[in-house]
Amino acid sequence: MVSKTNKFLGIVLISFIFFFLTVEGAVADKVILENGDILTGTVEKVVEGKLTLKTDYAGIIEIQMGKVKKIVTDNPVAVHLTTGEVVKGKVKPSEEGKLEVEPSPERGATTVEMGKIASINPLPRKCLNGMVTLLPVVTFSQATLIGKEALSALKP
Image 1 (tube, rainbow, N blue to C red):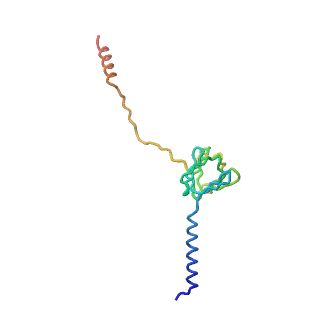
Image 2 (cartoon, rainbow, N blue to C red):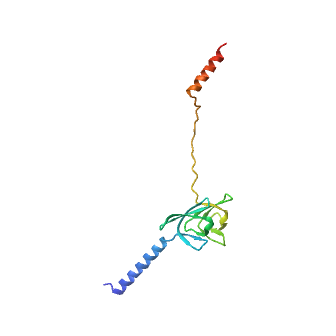
Image 3 (cartoon, one colour):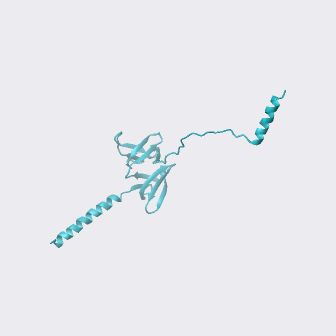
């Protein structure tokens, strides 16, 4: 027979396990604004000077990058720099006005100035692959004119 103390300890242990599993899944990206506000959600992209944050509480939020002080991501992102270089990894704040992109097997940690970020996770460019054949278009009046000129050229 199980004592009341063992049942209580079992319930406490199960509660702690559930709590830590729940907290682990509740991790989110953070955007810290110049005015001190902290927004949580998922950093979707930064394109044309606007950060797009997807939140559970307010849907999609667009924030001017000039108003963003710090960015922290829990998942790797592709940071496209104005130099054309792309650095991939989780992002966290570094010194004032800079971000640190976590190290990868190819490179060490990279510090990036906020002003040198062209985009983060931009949408891929849509390209059409294939062949296009253009045919000359001749209207009826042009064909008639061409036909008359051709006939007059044949007459002596």
